[in-house]
Length: 175
Image 1 (cartoon, rainbow, N blue to C red):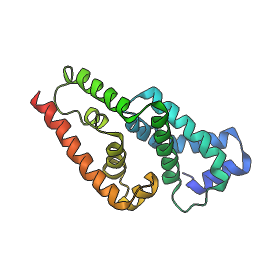
Image 2: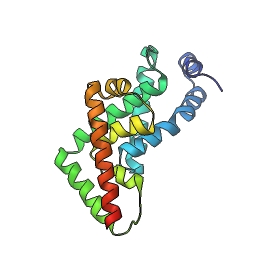
Image 3: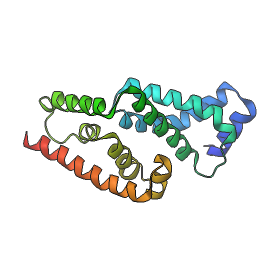
Image 4: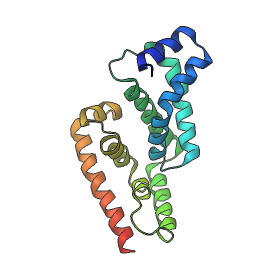
């Protein structure tokens, strides 16, 4: 298995479709899972997000300085794109309304603990931090850099995200 640097170097040197395909196949499964979580498991939006991320990444790959891992850099692009998409979509109220409607529609058909649904029903800021910390294993310092927030904000968001997730799971259990 070639290293990230070898994959990137191969692509930058050859600019070939085959070299890009190797890089894409190596990194996309992780990025797609992240995109699914960020888009509340909307497969179409996740696909779009990953494709847009690759377009940006390929354009900027020559300037990548390896100050972070390739995975972290690509994840940062993905998260920033998601943030921009949410801003374009509508105001925060519109997003909250959509999440509330989804929760109401799913609560009658889903029984038990459905972690993924509960995760998709918490606010996007909380969702990003809990995904990056608890699922992806990033440290608060890395999360702060990726999301352009303070380290303390990351810690606070994680606390609030866990609290909101517990509330989601508890409310599903009581229904």
